[in-house]
Length: 562
Ligand code: ATP
Ligand code: MG
Ligand code: MG
Ligand code: MG
Image 1: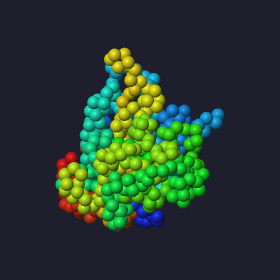
Image 2: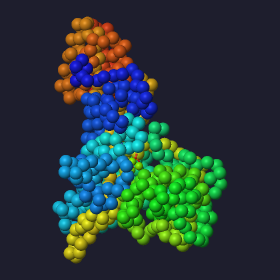
Image 3: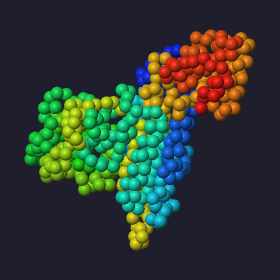
């Protein structure tokens, strides 16, 4: 591509962008913002996005997942069936068509794919089946301020698997896990697969793939000796006093005073008008007690308990208030953990909720009157850990330390959460109807682009890993008015293209300094400079990452490149 006519609007300064990846992608002319969290991928940015997509595609295809493309606009009825029309929360973008019918802009596609399969697949003979798509997703994120790291419109790969039994789900989960490992390795990312459900130890059926970076919003507990790694949302804010009381059982017992719980009482504790607090629910999901507070301004009155799980409820109480009420240490119950939990429950455990709810606005089963041992098993609670730096690893006993991470992928055993809710069934070998057992597997494609930049840059700009670089070679003519230089550069440009090498050709009549600065900023792995020595038949070849350079004849340059 010739730079003279290319849309690569580089900038020297970008005002308010906080994240390095946001700054560099704007400065390098890879993206432009249209509105908060909504970006245009300019030609260079789009090339990177494509490369990432193709790596993901190859690895999905390799494990036998089939690519399709689902609609982005979904009729609200599907989301009502799953219960998520109300409980997905304010991130769900809703709209109406001309007939006043409700639609949503897909933030994820469990409903749509489950609807598809319930219509098309009715026998175990077609199972297992894995399907995936690469598509634009919509989430009205609260704080879309980090560029591609958190968009309101962003590109995701989402895959869904359907199974006749658990063993089959376990196998596909393993395949996906391996595919994700391959993908993030190929993308040049330093990452860890972490247990997403950090409360209890052991196979929880959900892992997040975290790119280790200070730009990340998650904190990951990692063991210095074994490969234990878990996403611990609260650890960051744990203060020294809380650390003193780390026995959750004791903490729970402290609040399990016998008596009658009432909404009024809870509201009083929370310093809230009583009419605002509709319900408080404490339940155990995967061995982790979860506290959910529901405010009156949600549409909750006529819906069942499972529909009360609106992520926004978590904003009700701050961590300190919840701790004051429950006496529980940080990380045990609290809005941040709660937030994560609510998401997990919404996606995984809702089906089990009815059995697990221990307090649903009934007398004596309130959050302030929960009894460990009566309302949930004490053993499960004892399993819970509020891990902090310096603690012993729950797996091997060595020391735990913390790192920040960017969630670039998430694999999840859904079980029958959607197939039950949406009545998606197949006939088993005995002719009996069974709900599909499902898994879902997401990758933030556009987020991964930003994560790559977070990990691959220096003070001068981006350093693209070869596998995702928009072009592998940046060819620069120092002085386009010099005939030797112009001729040699043109020759090289044609030869490189013939050799199948992707080359960006800086043929602009700009000052050399400007061109070199831009080349550093844009970050192609190899730079070829045709300058003063063109007359002697020499050009310079330079590696962006190491700065290593040498002088060669143009013919040798061609031999040198792969
Ligand atoms: P987060 O915790 O960062 O909000 P999530 O857990 O809500 O992410 P998932 O529902 O697991 O996201 O979606 C699958 C993947 O999509 C995530 O692992 C992440 O890489 C990506 N993703 C999610 N939200 C965004 C966003 N707003 N912008 C860009 N990528 C996103
Ligand atoms: Mg999210
Ligand atoms: Mg997450
Ligand atoms: Mg996730």
